[in-house]
Image (tube, rainbow, N blue to C red; front, side):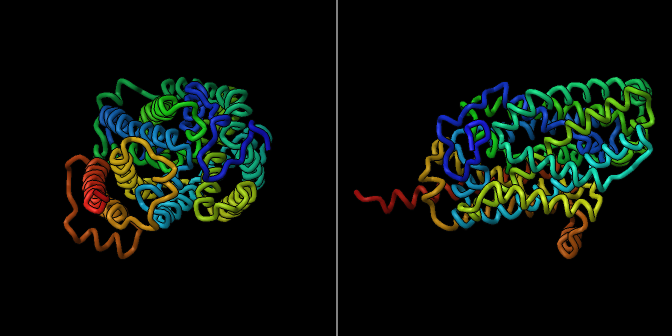
Length: 445
């Protein structure tokens, strides 16, 4: 294993491997931010164009600030994101967050392999009249495996700089022109919405961004400096967020029949030569999300099994995700996003509060030398989760959803993200203050 493609475990990354600068991280997170799955998320908003754009800006600024700060903390501590959770939640308490993150990363891996295969299938149908999606799932599952084995440094240097950034530029340019040409902006600007909730739209934008918070340190631990990580992740992901939700709102309002990524692919594929090139660029670009989720699933599992081979875990995760994608076509994910927001927005509040209480710097002792459990911090996280769920009313969770619906859910306000973050943050600050007070009382004179 070379320094170009290091397979680094849960220990702090050594200085010789802290080689990703601001430009590297900007390119990485801009690539990770461009996705067909995000482009059609605006279909779930039900807002007017004006409301959708405002919700995008508000949610983008809030969510990407959280992402940037999490990237900063990860670069400062130099450990993977789930290992970082040992500091606030405890050594074994971090296993709770790890399990949730493994599930979300695996789910996203299935989403991404599916949408890449659908894009490739639409392209092969357009060119050759052959629609063999299952073959493409196998091919792109294998490609995601190969990219994940490169690791963050190898991925940025061998794929993003040489291929990925050009695919991103091509797909953004084509989609922007195509969407504007096929949309009546003047009419849409004056039209109303369809009864959607502004703050639900903000929550969706935040949730999409914050879903990367439990992954971001897996990559920024290789950053040269925390400042580079903050700018690279926060700004790099903000730009595609604004583009995709903004232009996505124009797209879905101009084409009411579009309700998911498959509909976008079908619509784009109906064009001329330019559509073929756009589909090719989108297919290539989408592979970086598959890489990230396969890689981060394996790295998260190392918090449970630190001695396990990272390469072996990557192979296992890629194989499992590909196998699941062959059996299901997951492309609808609004409730999935809200559930991620419910778990990870308050979790970030707890992490931030604990990090601030530690003097804005985690030492190896904070991360590897703490107790097995920190029940107060876990409690603060769960209170934030319950508040988010009560406000957002995530559907499809059986008894939990039915029970919450009978508790007179809040209407209006400022959505679910900000209240749940604030409650968990304040409670965690209180828990940290009480912990420091106990230490002071028991310290030797």
